[in-house]
Image (cartoon, rainbow, N blue to C red):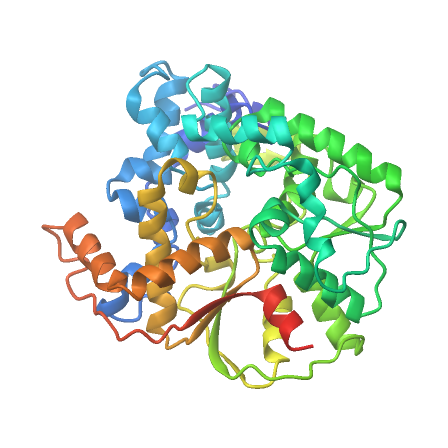
Amino acid sequence: MQKGEVKPITFSLDFDLRNYLWESRVCLACAMCKYGDWIYAVSPEVYDFGWICPEWEWGVVDHYGTSGRARLVNALLCGDIEPEYPTVREVAFRCHLCGGCDMADKRNLELEPLMMHQALKVYLVDRGIGPMPEHKKIVKRIERNGNYFGRRPEGKMAWTKKGKVKVTKKADILYFPGCYASYKYPETARAVARILNQGDVPFMIMEGQKCCGYIPFVTGMLKEATEIARKAVEQVRKTGVKTIISECADCYRMWKVEYPKMLNMATSDLGFEVLHIAEYAAKLIKEGAIKISKEFKAKVTYHDPCGLGRLSEPWIPWKGIRDADDWGKLKPPRNFRRGTNGCYEPPRDILKSIPGVELVEMFRHHHNAFCSGSCGGVMEAFPEQQRFETDVRMREANYVGAEALVTANPRSYDVFIESLTRFQNDGMRKNIEEIEKRFSGTDTFKSLKKKDLNLQSVHDLSVLLASVI
C-alpha cells in the first residue's frame, strides 16, 4: 500500500462505537484476553485458573469473549449484520466489563476493548435493543426511590441509629455509603463509621444521597448514568468536602473513573479526592491513629474487586488520531490504563497488620484477579452465569488452602456468601462437573481435582477490621 492511501482515523475515548473500528479490525484473536497469564495455571489440575474472562469460560465459544465480540462489532459497523440479530444483545450484556481483557490485551496491542464493550452496550440501548428487562426494573427503582433495592429513601440512614455512630454535619471528609451497605449489609456502613470514629476522623454524609448509578452505567444507559453523575458531582462540590470515602468498590470506581469519563474531565479535575475505606484505613493504621487489639487466627486469601483493582486507575480524557499510515500510532501519544496501578496493597497491608492472619494469594491476584461474577449487571440478568463464575473463584480460594476469603466490595461479598453456602452443599463437585460437561470432547479440563472444603467463612474487609480494633 502506498503511503497516503489510508487516512488517519480521528477519534476520542468516549462511548461512540464507531471510534473502536480499529479495535474490531486489528484484534488478532491471540487469546491473551481469554487466559490472562498462563503462569497461574501451574498444573493440569488448575488449568481453569488461567482464565481471565469469566463469561468466555462460562460460554466456551469465542463470541462470548473479546475476540468474538470484536468481530461482531466489526460486522455491525460494516453493515454485515443488523443490531437486532439475537446473538448481539446476548453477547453484549453477558459481558461483565471487568477489565480483564483490557489489561491483558495491552500486553500485546494497545487496544481499548473495555471501551469498545461499553460503547457496544450504549449502541444497543440507543437503538432500543437493550438493556435487559431486569436492568430496566432496577433503573426504575433507582429513579423512583434513589436506590438499587427500591427501598424507602428515608431508610438509607437507618444504619446510623444502631450502635455508637458519630456523624458530623460539616467535615472535610464525606462518607458515601453505597446501596448495599445502606440497606442490605448495614453492618458494613457501621464498620466504616467505627473505623473513622476510632481514628478520630470527623466525617459527614451527604443529605439526600442517591445511588451512584452503577447499574445504569454498566448496562449502557448512558443518558441516565450521566445525569446521575452530573447531579452528584455538583452536589458534592457545593459541600466543599476535600475527600469522598466509600466502602463499595463499584461506588468508588464510579466516582473516581466513570463520572469523569462521562462528564469529559480528568479525575484530577473533580475538585475532591476519591478514596476507598481500605486506602484510608491502611493510612490510619500506619500512622497509629487506630490500634488493632484483637487477633483473627485464620489462613486468609484476599479477592481483588475489579472496581477497586484494575478498573480504578485515574481517568484522563484523550482525543487525537490513530495514524494508519504510521503503523496505527496514536498522535499525540498517551498513557494507557493497564490495570497495574489499582488499589492492591492497602487491603493486604490491613490484613497483614491483624495478628493471627496468614495471608495466602490465589493464583490470580492483583491486576490478574478473576472477576467475582458480580460485575456489569450480569448477576441481575444472567444469574446462572454469575453463579458458575463465582463458584470458580471460590474453588480457587479453597484450592490454595484458605480458611477465610476477604473482599472489599459488598456486591462481591454478597455472591461469595451465597457460593459458600452452595459449597457446603456439594457445590464444588457440581461446579467441576459443569466445567467438564461444557468442555466435553476436549482434553482441556479433564484433570480438574475436587479438594476438601477448607473455606469456612467470607468477610467484608471493613467489617473484619472494625471487629479487631
